[in-house]
Amino acid sequence: SQTIHQWPATLVQPVGSPLSLECTVEGTSNPNLYWYRQAAGRGLQLLFYSVGIGQISSEVPQNLSASRPQDRQFILSSKKLLLSDSGFYLCAWSEFWDRDTEAFFGQGTRLTVV
Amino acid sequence: AQKITQTQPGMFVQEKEAVTLDCTYDTSDPSYGLFWYKQPSSGEMIFLIYQGSYDQQNATEGRYSLNFQKARKSANLVISASQLGDSAMYFCAMRKAAGNKLTFGGGTRVLVKP
View 1: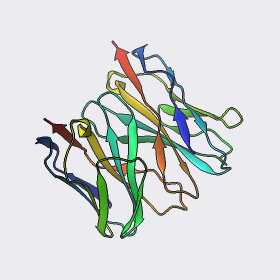
View 2: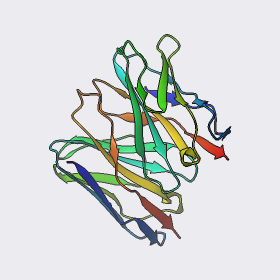
View 3: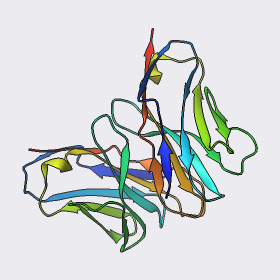
């Protein structure tokens, strides 16, 4: 069966520090991968999605970047965090684009920038 | 561009009663999928139900049913016989069948009263 792992679960980082959140998927190949951010009590904002290794689509201009060094690994990064980067970050995967399957989510990372 | 609108930020429902959560969407694509997710306070995203744009019948999954009105571009979620454990945020989402983005609405918070 497929599983998705996302870590860490919580993170407190000072302004100006770097960030690296990692997400890995097991039990499938060539998944679509997504990074979402959720502000407190709000909806999910799509940040990045990837359809293959090295292929990243950015949805909103921001202080963050994403990379996909391996088929089932998706990394969210920042060189210098801003206070506005605080939020709940969710990684998700879904099967290849021509099938209407649901997305499966990781447990999320609660990031607080102080 | 895809757009999902959930007009109800929050609502109360009495235990054992039914509740309808509104969702409207905007797309020019003929083929797409609609999804509903539940997010309890723990933050995890739980897939509830899926409706394909070409499906002739409304989707049902246990106590969840989807009132799909394609001409009106609405996909309302109906939860029957509400339980205390149904208290959560509920998100409507859409994905084009030939695309890769899964776009979410702003969510509706449901609180079930005993």
